[in-house]
Image (cartoon, rainbow, N blue to C red; front, side):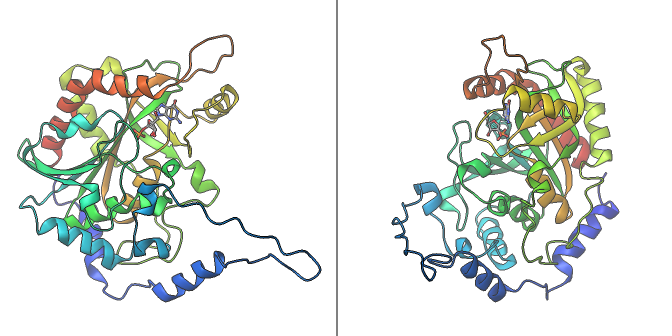
Length: 352
Ligand SMILES: O=P(O)(O)O[C@H]1O[C@H](CO)[C@@H](O)[C@H]1O
Ligand SMILES: Nc1nc2[nH]cnc2c(=O)[nH]1
């Protein structure tokens, strides 16, 4: 599956045009205006309300830099991050993986590892969620050069979506061609059991319906087009490869293909919300992945994703069962061996 036209067009986007449309100055103005101090207060005739002093952001949010002042990371900043990493490892990854909650062990099988803690990488956000170690691991798996995010960034942690997805663009500039997103998700489809795996056939971008999209803001053509299509977001060829691995591993009874959605979190859903999602054809629900895929498709990465069904979505009222993060993490540990084998074989067939 090497050297397809999709890959060629991706590199044209990133390497082709040096003069993108990114207007940093305009961005900065828009931001300053939107956050204008005291705006709308103290109008004629109305008593001026005193603003409470802003409370300091939590440390993982405060530890940011000039990128906070912009509506997104510029190409130059992302390039700086990629160059920082490339100058410190000999691994040149062609596959990028984001490990979901409890799925960090996917990185453990890498050989010749180079590990970077997020806090040591310039401009990088940091992980604040249990089950997300917060490090970038480079190495080789089945002879393929890979970079793994052991821990992702979520909207509910306080990060805007463009910040959650910045590492995907870093992967692109590192030379990654295949992007694999993994997540833990609640199983809404009644056929799914805890511990099953769902290959993402498609997603519903509910946050995007409301305009909350990682691509919102000025578009830089060096990453990708202003209006990227999403009709083949989950690469059909990669899905077929995964299905052939599933068949050969003889695990077809626990693997499904379905539709994922991401809600903003951090609440798990009410019964009424889950019933609504079910009516809409959603098979699994989580708090990640969709915006990462949007970003990856935009910059021409070929995408594959799977959910580990970590808990059953409870749509009935007369039960004690409730979603909880412990169960989500435990399911990840329980399924680690199968997922490691699946990912290793998948990578070998895709790029080995
Ligand atoms: O999507 P990942 O990061 O795998 O984790 C899922 O599990 C956590 C909730 O238990 C949320 O972060 C949700 O998004
Ligand atoms: N939104 C949501 N995210 C999850 N992540 C793991 N399980 C769940 C769930 O049931 N709902």
